[in-house]
Image (cartoon, rainbow, N blue to C red; front, top):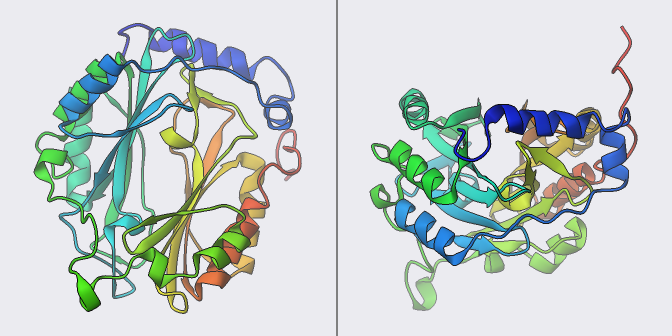
Length: 334
């Protein structure tokens, strides 16, 4: 973990950021700092994709390379109904440089059966990577799934090699996965519908006030926290590396499933919970994804069933709680 920047140096940089103001979180929420992450080079990207054995995507605006890790080997059901892997059973690994360009960070979210958690955890440690969180995302899913966040610091190429070595004996390595469906299963009148046919996308977009993306039979929104600058080990955490709120829709417009995640400051947690419950969405988990992040971020997973428009209104209500109010100094009084 000390290829170019020692862990102690990274933690010191993060601590100094948090100590710059007694108002800390409030100051950053009110006026986010503008910084520039050095881009990955073409050689960096080639090295990452060679190590992972799969072409990824590079977000130039966020200087972040992402490799998708869907669990296409699984057949998932929620509340007894089959749901697509793109509903929330796809992991990822992202790599970007630190702000000073002297090192890089890998952040990932891995989708695991219960019996796969401990072996992958041991493999990550054996390859010099660390665990940031282990948690659930769902209720009612079959088989039972857990999510493990793995992170590391080093050069982009070394991080990709370490992560690929960690996945080598698991189903998660791209080489060990069946291919993702790339389109309708058949042609003509029997073509499988996509999210574009299953949902009224303009109506959903009007409620959420963002535009989502169709991924096979699902429709997904991903919303970053552009009101904040969040640093972890001198790396700017943005939507492409996991600092985002999202909502995925599966099923049909009248009988939809929604699942998602809300990225919150600590004082936003309970307002978000109240908003979700007011819209009859179930709060599935409240937890961390990252270590040593400043300001401290909390993530909430939720699930719901019903007409898609009503579910979208619940997601929008949760988003409306973000960036509001001020953190209570010292928390609640007892």
